[in-house]
Image 1 (cartoon, helix red, strand yellow):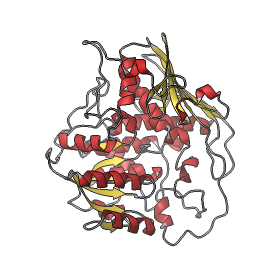
Image 2 (tube, helix red, strand yellow):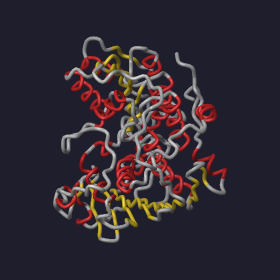
Image 3 (cartoon, one colour):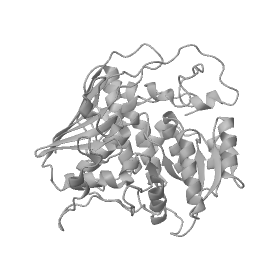
Image 4 (cartoon, one colour):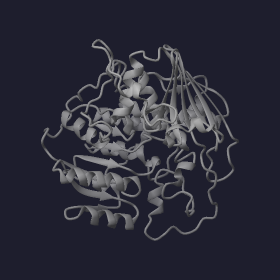
Length: 449
């Protein structure tokens, strides 16, 4: 078994390692002394979590295997029925594990795809980097600010490529919007609204024995022990619990806030103030608010990011049909973006002006590592390319951590019931160390430290 790693000791031992000014310059630097496969070598993969979206990731891996670019050596899952199905799907040569640490001990595995519940992302990514594996981990990067920072430090200390699953960074539509906006076609952007449907209301309270195929203790992992409640936590409803999922602001917010920062070239900028309001916190297992509004204030340059989650919205505002999206408000007008990053105009599926825009010869072209085929660039393939080229990917863990910090700070302000003044350099709440400790550092359950 791998040795147990404490988040706090990990951060203490790795403090000070980071990107520095590279993100602000828009540079994707080479990783220092990382060992990677050659450009034409096959990567050997392991998959941690193969239910739900993890099963979709496994399907992508099988398609790449059929093209000769990867091998799949192992899968890990704490639901024995899902595990058996995944092994059968992969076929000969695939080993099954119920403990991800045993999978990480394999020297032949180059990289892992992590699709476990959100509360596992930080720990499994840190352990994977410590074991010398490159990582693709689903969004959001983490449920806590310190957990996300520890992921960054693990990646840097071990020179591992960590890609987080906010796929718009590898797709052409959001790149079109970023190119349009960064070349000043909207003038200065003063306000960005990320809007979303309300969180669902519900959640049962009566616990019962978990199904025999599910290792409930291992599913909970670092979360506090609690009884299994059917259709309330597992498999995907943990999203509606503040501790484990944090609602749509942490789920879909990981997509739209990533697009917002990228389109404005603001990956390295942190807010100075966060103020959240919303429905009273429900007294039930699903304890995220149905409605929530968060205002993030940025300085130098000055602009405002808004998370806008309401029950009632005019029909025209449900543009794109996805139930969430972005509006960039600038000096010369506005730009609508659908939830997947595509530029739209009213009821039209695509904004042709943005779609057809080409920057001048001396204009800005936002960095994208991978070649793309119009709307069909695969985020996983872009990660493979980053590994082989020994470079950081488009949704590198440092960028993803900054996005997840926005998501988490919105929830922190809501739970605290007041605005937060934030120091982005130290990642501390200004003037309130107790709140910083209580809400950013989360106690984890033995033995899952």
